[in-house]
Length: 89
Image 1 (cartoon, rainbow, N blue to C red):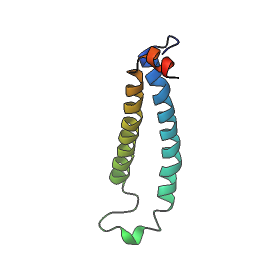
Image 2: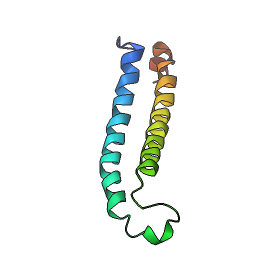
Image 3: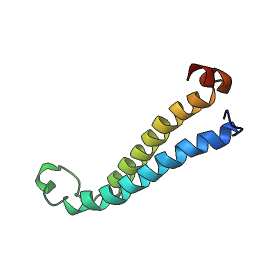
Image 4: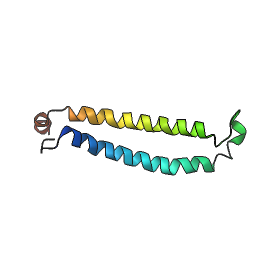
C-alpha cells in the first residue's frame, strides 16, 4: 500500500494465497478421507462413512474457518497507515 496499491488489492493478495492453500487442502484431503473411510466404518454409529451431508458440512466448515482466518489478519493489515509502517521498518 505504501507503493500505491489499493486496500482491496492488498486484501486480495493475501486472500488469494489463503484460497490457494484451501483448494489444495480440500483437493488432497477429501479424496484421502473418502479412501480411509473403510478404516473408521466400525466407529461410526448411525451413518455411513461416505455420508454426503456430513462431508459437505465438514467441507463448508473448513472453507468458512479458512476464509475468516485469512480475511481478519489481511483486513487488519490494510488498516495500518503505510507511512507509519515504513517508519517502523
